[in-house]
Image (tube, rainbow, N blue to C red; front, side, top):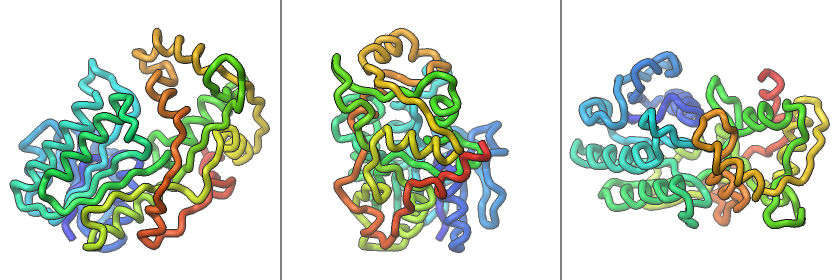
Length: 307
């Protein structure tokens, strides 16, 4: 199958590309100018230079494709650089699906995100908007909603590597976030980290399966883990014991209100809101696709020892 990839040089995109080409598919990837070095050298994989806002480049990337996979997602905005949730997660997706339909591409897969139904942040709102655009496109669609994704970063930003760098390796205690005035159940909110190879497998397995048309799959690991358990596992994976202390999100949120417009500040208010809401699945999306999810344990996190 000839597959066009929008967002193929990022963390998930690189793993999807490797899985696709290993299965004998060919891939054409839209690559931002200056990011060509981020594209893996793989058989059956070539690049089209351009931005997602460049209609001509999108047409070139999508022309002759059997399917398109839209993977673009960002964690924070940099408006001065044109990096916004609306531009990349909503308008970019809408433009891609419109052109795909016009060019006769029949199949479309979208990486959305788990836990976005609350729609209280621009990240969630634009992810939901991209889902609605795909459902209305007339294409044979499948949507994936992964929880937090971990695995070999392959030179990209990744959940556990970031936590190791920002919290585990830092000299100060790691924060166990909590709401309110009293530290009740500090760090007790739950996430279900899912391995990037399982996410990539879900995309590739669904490509040729008619039963996945019109389906949304929540993608989670096998366990719901507390924030404290996640930090403890990351620390153990790199041979450390980490002191952790309760941290009121109210105080951190106040600091973020002043500083999260600066890229050096580690967390935004919206990220804190979504983090404390938790991120677990009500649907066994991986199981529905015949995938047994990898555990979040020290063995799976061995790549952290190299970072």
